[in-house]
Length: 202
Image (cartoon, rainbow, N blue to C red):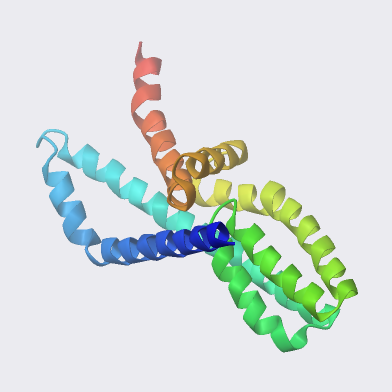
């Protein structure tokens, strides 16, 4: 029990750190960008600035895509919870599902576990209905919604999206999962803009 509590506390702490760092980064982004681009040689500064701005745009697109996926999970949960007879908890639980769904790979599962637990506590049949719904919905989200949204948002193939999130989560946990897809998008952009043209020129 203590181990589970420590893991939950660690998860909350990591999520809080990521949110704080993200807000701080966004607040200081213009100054950080200007300082970073100045480090490049003058002859290449324009190109570095262009690529850097495109990478940052990809990160913004990823955040927007993650928000869309989370909203889809929240709205689906809201409709289901009203339909299954958990209307008194529907709004609060849908909000929890939406917030947790932003975290790749594990967030959706955590939100589902919370809803399923409340469903079983209310009525075993309701809990079973919740279990079936979230098992099916997570398959839809993991293999259809998430890869397609991310492919359009950050121009990363769906398979790379899933693999990047798995590797990031395996290496750095929650923080790694959050950073994996924008990092993959940045690396692919650099490969397309720098490495591929050089190979074509040979």
